[in-house]
Length: 154
Image (cartoon, rainbow, N blue to C red; front, side, top):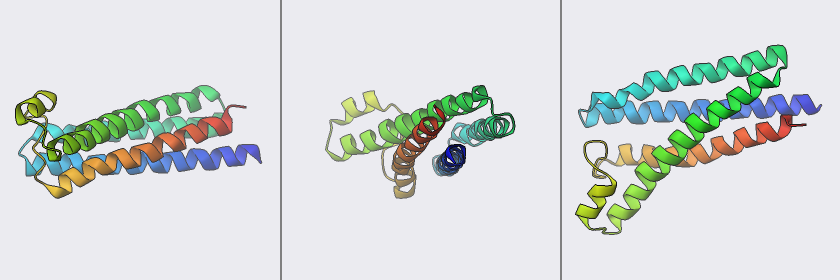
């Protein structure tokens, strides 16, 4: 029964990770079109390859039962998706950026923290909302990866 619960947790973490990937793929592709910055679209391919690696590692763990595959998945998922996308991209690049901008931070100081062309002035609701949502989904993803770790660590 314990292993069955572990696999349920693993499946949930894969859903959260996949959801975060799809959200960030949309966000970056949309940003590349709206802002004329094709370099943003690289996240679609790189994130997709990373998510496929996560699926492969989880599948290998299910097939073999070797914890190396599970821990490899957990580490990659939490570092690349939870931390890289959820915390850095979602929290810093969008939540903090928007809070400081709309709180009236001096524009020159704001630009030091968020230099162009990597950072846009928050004027496109869909781009900013999907960016902030990456933080929210990222927290869910980190939580689900941790629950997966907890369910298998015994």
